[in-house]
Image 1: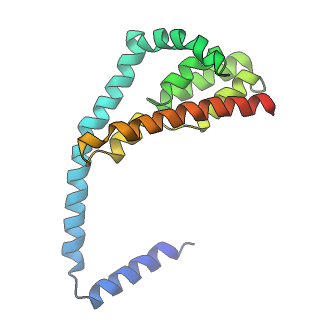
Image 2: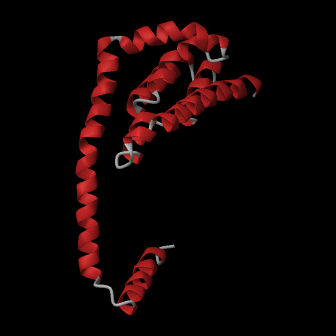
Image 3: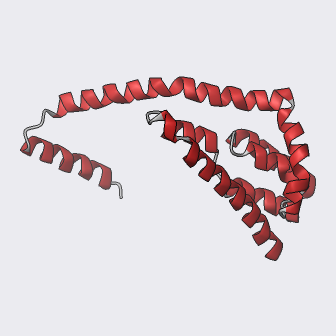
Length: 167
């Protein structure tokens, strides 16, 4: 496996030279486009991080988690994990700290802890990844993919807790 990447470079450079492509200028143009794209992402990533902090500091996350707890419990997700299920789409590090708190409070082998681990592992930080993937796309067509991802995150949370109950 240590020869795969160098071999790919040799193959790509050989093909480029055979097609008479100026490899250096193509590389520089690609690097320039990469830097422009990265700089265009910075405001989006900053907005996502600020939103995560505002949710936590303002107490909105706690209030929403408390309001959603009965509905989550009705869907089979322990009430104690409503905040984890709410924070996970926004912040990976925030949800990891909540997972750590759950593991410390309930022990690693409890039903609540098993559900917390599967919730943490079965979903992604939706808004961060969404901001990265859709940064350069048409702004009008973002609502449907976002709804689909949030619905799938909710379903993965419910199904993961169901599987923890059976196993």
